[in-house]
Length: 362
Length: 249
Image (cartoon, rainbow over all chains, first blue to last red; front, side, top):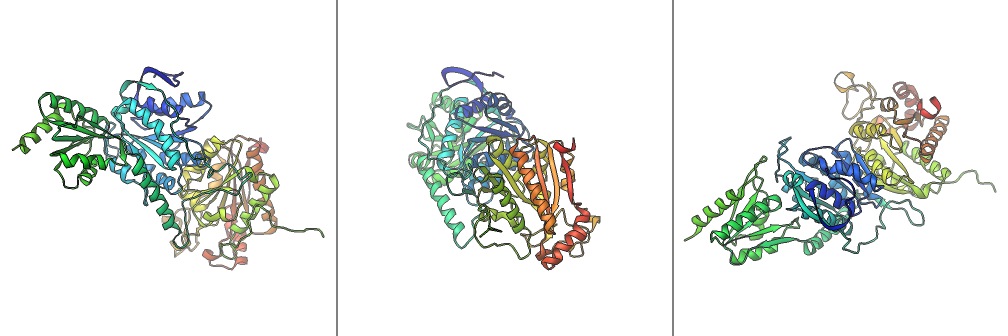
């Protein structure tokens, strides 16, 4: 593993996705990392174990993912930037903590390098945790911002941005990657700079010196108190939906078929789109970068002009439901998916596109 | 005129929600007095459990957080590792610490986290209506042991302090009780020692277990409950210092 001396740089360097997210977190000012071993994300904790102490920051291997997310909870409550990373089964264990983070309005960054499920599943890449991430797996009405990066560069960029969004909105931001992206090596630049002016953390627990007591809580008793708290949370989530949607549109000019895919599948779909165009098929790609908030408006706009949508995922069909909600019956939405660690090839996706072209052309 | 008694400023001036005869009020006051006497009100962060003491921040005037059931030692770990200059304590009941949070307390001790834990053992889940706790004694009638707890099928009372005292990372473990004035004074001394160790940077976790009355779910008068601690509970959970690494060596 390439170690040491990765600093902010405009030079292109070579890293795997897991390490790129780890270094981006350090450059983003992550004060503390807590995690429990699980494949295929172990490069993150190994990297952090080396680099965080070098920076005089906190690295701790927890006794479980339950403990890890609660260590994040504690560090965040004192105003520190903190994160954890895991893979699907471990993220399941963190759902309780993520609900409490939402209730207490604490910022946090959680990386999920997805693997095949359900249960222990396998350690191959998958996208079966989309619902858990975007519908939230914990109890109660809450949201987390979810990024679905599709390159090593974007994994680093999303991680960097995640810390700012987490602090700005006092929310958990989840990076939904997969085992392929995590292990894949690509060139990238780590030119990470603070972009936003963030509100002061006057709510943080720092000792009550010179001010009134601060309390961080998710328990709201009393008539109507919790309902008002929920309304406040929902207003915040609406603001995120208005301001933070990110999405890439690729070769939509003249497209009659639009593939919708995120993460590594979007890379594969992009190759299929290029080959399709070479073969004269009018196909384009919409790639959600934020999975929540979902780019519903972009898809709805495209639906008004286009004939057909094909959603491709490494799951039994999860994001496709968001695509259907956005399309709202304006056009057919079809689905192609692989599960349990199966990875669709560009040719497989192209073949699907061809079949759809034949079956729907008059 | 000489002031003989006053409320410590670390306790807020407000009515209590605890039942008559409950031990939490005494435990809160001991904790508040210790924080005042050590002069650490402005750099202390407390953790309230899930249980009857979930609203501890309504009474204790220090920065506080309320966390998921049993997870206080993990939350405390995150806080202390990032803020070694702060004094961090968790206040946990027997359901919180000895049932759902067993892994977190054992591993916080195992890692020798520099934390102070106040463990209030009243042998029952109070908040949810008096169900059996791991610390419920044999024969004790609770909502979920209507015939009295039997070891066959319901297990034995869990002696968490004895378990923790085995770990090198737990440097100070003492069991106290609130059942008489001398015992209350000893509980305060123990708590103070537990905080002092953290302030000195002593390399490990300090835990004070306090046997505390729950007259409501023991179905007793407050005075009977105090006597029950002496006559029954302290036989299962012997009162005294289990470990003080600095002094035992």
